Length: 168
Image (cartoon, rainbow, N blue to C red):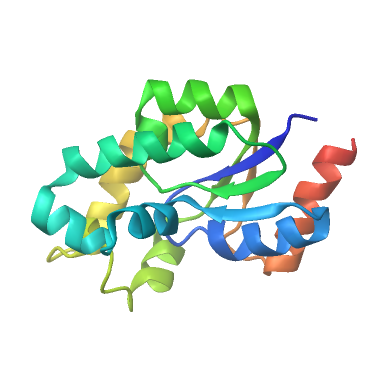
């Protein structure tokens, strides 16, 4: 097994919730890359997007991916768009087993409705935006080592499925 596990997928797929439980079960450190970005920048993701724009955010995201992919023994919850950058993907694939947590647009909408801190979904038709982004990102997510559908599963079921894959 590689030294880290990186969870990728759309916002609301369960990367942070699953990552925390998975890290505990494997006695690994849990790192939420978006939280690491917020800590580094001393402001929220929404503020970064609003004040500095998405290109700036993606640059900082790349630095954080580089920093954490250089360490071992971690479960990384990656931001939804991290897979869109070739350099990020190369670093993550080199240092981690990539697990795509796949979720239907309907479930994503339901799980993210109360999120005020998700700048990409602060639009008149968030479901349409989710579908558009998923269509663009799906081929990148599909490059993960394996996929787990999280749509109708409890966190513990998802964790068990991931653990079984690693035990195989």
